[in-house]
Image: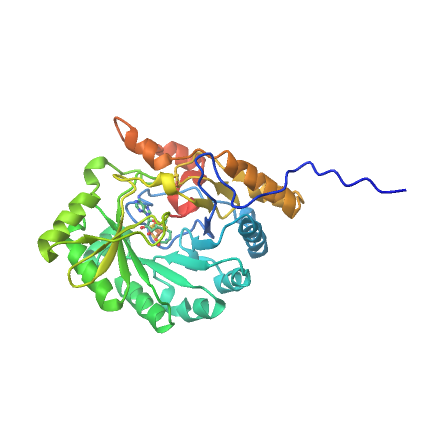
Length: 355
Ligand code: SAM
Ligand code: SF4
Ligand code: SF4
């Protein structure tokens, strides 16, 4: 007697998985902790926060399993972030696990740099390919007023250690806020040039957690370019490294290159291939999303890889998010979420979902 073929209820997945606007799922930002050792004014300006419960945080094995599934669906670029990712105990072990995944083309990290000097070499040895360090000012007094603690020497030592450890293509992330650090554009650019690190200036964004945001404090991409042009002469716009790259790249006459991430005034949602995983396994399809898909619950319920992959593919296929474009279209633009909502739901915070 011949056996009837097994009936599968899920259609076979075809890659890449495309959302409703034809955008593939390529890039995953994994926030490994919501804790942070700084309190940057644009990200964590409140005196108190509601934290995720420790027992809710994904184990490294769970993160690696989800990344494996995402990579089977087309993700080849993973960035570890937070909160401050270097606060997560034993991070190099996670990096080693992820680096064993041959589908990943990039495995990078965004850090505030405070703890980088002591960890750069072990992160590199574990298989991390790129590091981005956030640095908004070269003035110690400003650093303290922005981040609510001292730390500039540690961050600079962290950048130096990352170079010594052999990280090529170092990047510096700098949020520019009007009335705070727009007068340091040139100094930061020159520091980046001297260190062999490309600076990416970021417009102040009205993300969750930015409870003091206002449009008046946004120093726009056009203003940044005008200011740099006054100082350095004509600036050339470069072709993007990748269509989905968030930064537009430019070059000064002396060859120094830099990027500007202008999500506030020039959103780039139409090419967005990014999604985010919170430390407790909520998968967010947009930086501005109110809610996401609880992959930890699916994983801990005992679902198999195929079932989790189908859940992810189905959600991505239905994705219509274009959060930054919708924010830009608003007539009156204020903060994204009131403090009471953030207290009730820490998943709305930038330091939970990762920048
Ligand atoms: N703690 C790490 C750090 O600061 O690099 C990683 C997490 S942090 C949330 C990631 C990035 O988000 C940082 O480069 C930070 O400057 C950026 N960021 C946070 N809040 C922002 C805001 N309101 N506007 C623009 N960028 C922001
Ligand atoms: Fe600053 Fe990053 Fe911490 Fe936010 S998560 S407060 S941007 S260091
Ligand atoms: Fe992507 Fe959402 Fe950011 Fe737009 S706002 S670029 S859709 S994550």
